[in-house]
Amino acid sequence: MNRRRLLLLTPLLAVGVFRAPLAWAQRANPGAPALLLAGRYRPGISLRDWWISEKYDGVRGRWDGRQLRTRGGERINAPAWFTAGWPAKPMDGELWAGRRRFEQVQSTVARQQPLDAAWRELRFMVFDLPAHPGSFDERLRALTRTVARIDQTWVQAVPQRKLASEAELQALLSEVVRGGGEGLMLHRGGSLYRGGRGDDLLKLTPHDDAEARVVAHLPGKGKHTGRLGALLVETPEGRRFALGTGFTDAQRADPPPVGSWVTYHYRGVHEGSGLPRFASFVRVRADEARYRSAR
Image (cartoon, rainbow, N blue to C red; front, side, top):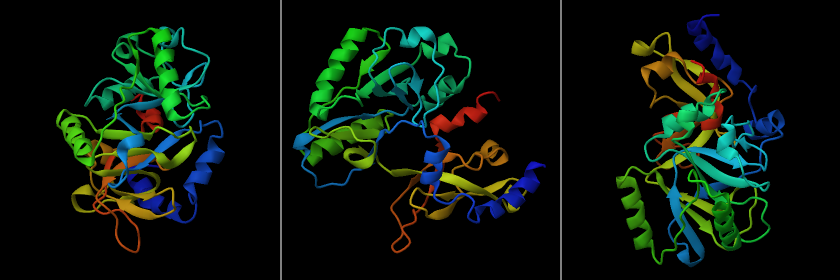
């Protein structure tokens, strides 16, 4: 079936086939790690008990004690030397190549056959120890010792700091963003590691961002006739909306597949419906981009 016909037919898939995406994902990949996920920062919290770090624009990686996995549970095919000597205990972190280099990281991680030269550009930025029973304050001390024992230049503990006021927090955010960074992460010092999204880990960026699952390709009109007009997506809460901006011509000709997760930016939500305002496509979620790696 050609792509144009597929684009015309796929809206029919939206009728109930991909409902309850979160439950569907858990059934589809029961081996996915139960990762701690970030909520959104809102002004007014007391910063005294919070650790602040940069939000790295890379690929989330979890060392399970034997191998690296994506946040979706897929194995990351890193070179043997990259993880040699790593401890048997789990580590949560970000595979990162520096600011404004996400595409390079994604391309490197997605390859089935790892390229040594590309992996030598990456660092594993460790920010938590999922199996440690203590508070984040305690885990942070243990993490620092763990990274020191590994003693590899490409394995680093994420720098954490304390700030005293909202003004200092916003000043740091502006500094990071001006330098090409994505934003900040705030981690409650007294919190335990619990899988799922909550208020113990918060993200602060100049824009809101979220993820949704693609449930259909909506056909384009006018200059986009015969290719993607918009993605019909569904949020983890079950809300559906059309995501029609932010795509390159190449992405409209070869859109993210139905069933994949995508990241989008938005500015607030509509009252009543709760749907995002001015939503714009950013990218396919990093751990679901392998379908493009061989192209």
